[in-house]
Image 1 (cartoon, rainbow, N blue to C red):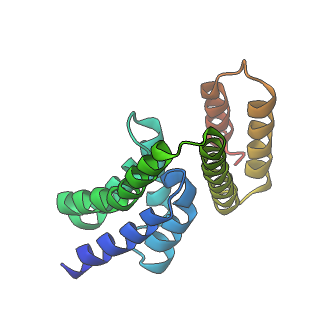
Image 2 (cartoon, rainbow, N blue to C red):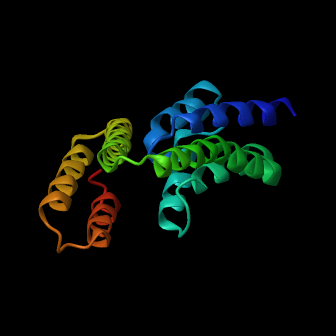
Length: 174
């Protein structure tokens, strides 16, 4: 029961700063479950993250899978609730506040600031994850190429880039 309480408290605190979604705090979550608590291995974390990204549904599915790995179905339930409730309450009250603002310029400023914060956190998280998982120069090069292609070309579907990564990885270059 202590494990479930620890899981609930730590994920609830993490959710309170997950502005921009769970992706924004993924490196911190990785540090918590792999480095600090040693609940799962880095490979298991990467596997669950990949499953969550490939499957339809919310991004926090990785957290549900990790909760399940730690404590079964009850762990999955606790992890899912813990990662959702603080941010849901904050968004509810923020939306009520924004809706109540009469000045459209002030409302737009708040919305732009919130969007900039979310984008910044997601980019910082992406950088940290790429830095953590790219342990070879070829992986770093592939990451840079994918970023450039994604930014410059709107015609190339992301699945082609994923397939490129799979081919390069399967060939043993990464």
